[in-house]
Image (cartoon, rainbow, N blue to C red):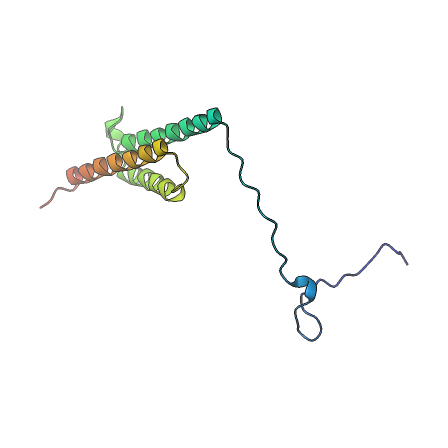
Length: 126
């Protein structure tokens, strides 16, 4: 028989139904603080995020018919993109620079206003 082969019982409970001592939770090692990015990388990251937001904003505006092809308006696409930007706001809450946060809130406000105005034109009050 091969001496290298071993059988290990990995069950958490002993035959009496009690939790085995080795299964008690061990204290977790302290997590290392996240490394801060150098200032130039932080600035570049911020610029990339703001550029991304501006691209989404342009896509939403185009979908509302405010772009180069106003006859290609699609209200459902516009609403979807606005919802995506709002989801970004929720998911990034507390992790943005002041400039990123201000830009994000401004874009959402402007797009919501445009969207409401567009809906008023499409579905006038009776």
